[in-house]
Structures are given as structure tokens and as C-alpha cells.
Image (cartoon, rainbow, N blue to C red; front, side):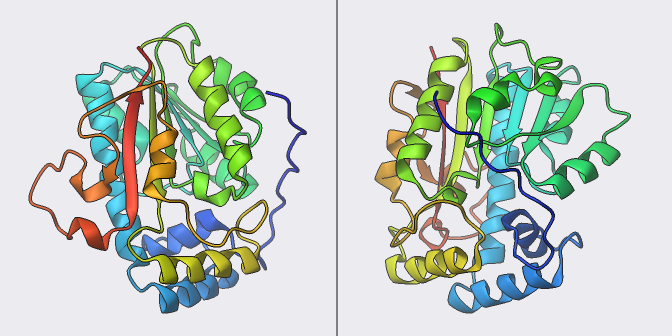
Length: 272
């Protein structure tokens, strides 16, 4: 995939960072005043944002358990992992498969340093600094290649990260590269907020994040649609029940929230 190397983010505590904003929504403490102010302003537009993030973590848990237990995956790459919180991928995977290898990837230096400090004694888990906008360099990172065997099936997790890249053509190129590069038997898991259910509110939210400089690329008029996310799985075999609003993806108990109140979709595709 031919692309210029994305500029390395610098630690800027005066500009909101989506990972730190998410940390605030999830009740974490690894955020700054600018992140908290942005989170509160975003909640004034869509008050349900903390609920969406919590549902996103529940979806992550179900997806990783499926991949480790039913699909037998032993290699995970969590891209755009964000700051550590409860129910991380390696904790979920290791509860099912203690030999699973997990690579966390983020382009935020703060996330990487924090994660490396927390996981320095874990020989099966590593945190690397790389950027999804350059997937070729990401998959070739020495820290990643020491842990991941490209000849074996792998699960690439893109949970709540693609919306931070506004350029649709760039996202299409990223997804296409990943689909072509992963070995047969691998999986691609995606969650992504969409504008179908609340178009006006989510368009205002997207514009707010753009104005705050929290996302990259050209401005969009709103969030992507569910149909656009479904196309990311073209060429892959969708795991049942397909691309759905995340509370509906293999719920393990009664639904906590109505699916139509959670405007995030998710799915897993299998490269056969």
C-alpha cells in the first residue's frame, strides 16, 4: 500500500485525544482537562456517549471470547487500543487460552508508554507504537513481528478506531490491505459508530470532534452509515449474526439497552 508516513503525534495535553476522552467516558483517570471538557461538551450533544462506550467494551469481551474459544485464535492485534482499562483483550483472551499472544497498537505516545509499563512482565503481551494509517509499517513493526507469526491465523481488532480517520478512501485502502495481507483462517473484527439512527445529533457530534482536532482527515458531514461498514467485510465470510448494532451481537444475557439506542455497529469477518 503506497502512502506517505503519517506524522507522529506528540503529547499535547491542550488538545483532546479520543483515547483519553474514551478513558473519561469509561470512568478512568488517565485524561486531562481538555479531554474532560471535550467529553462534557460531546455529552451535551449526545448524552448517551458513556453508555455507548460501555456497550463497546461488552462487545469487545464477547468478540474476543468468541475468537479465542470458538474460532481457536491464538494471535490478536488490537489496533487503536487506547489507554488500559478493565476487561482488556489480553485478560479476556488469556482467561480462555493462556497461550494467546496479544499485541496492542496505538499511535499515542502516552498510551504506549503507559501500556508498556503495565505489561513489562507479561511475556505474551506487548504494546507497540504504530499508526493504522500506515498498515504496512504497522504489520512490519519489529515489536509486533516478534510476537505475531504472519503465516498463522490472526485476529485484527479495529474497535472504535476507524471513525477517527475521516478520509473514506484512506480507510478503504487500509481495510483492503489488511484483508489481503492476513493469512487464511484469520479474522477482522470491527466496531464503528454510525449515523443511521440519529443523523442530526451524530452529524453535530462529528462536526464537534472535527473542530476540536480530535480526528484526522478531511471533514465529513456526519458519521458513516451501517451499509458503509458492511462493505468493509467484502470478500470475508461474516460470522453470524453479521454486522448488527452491538447489543445484538451474540448477547450473553438479556439486553441491557435497546439495540436502537446504541448507534454503534459491529461484526467479525473470516478469511477462508
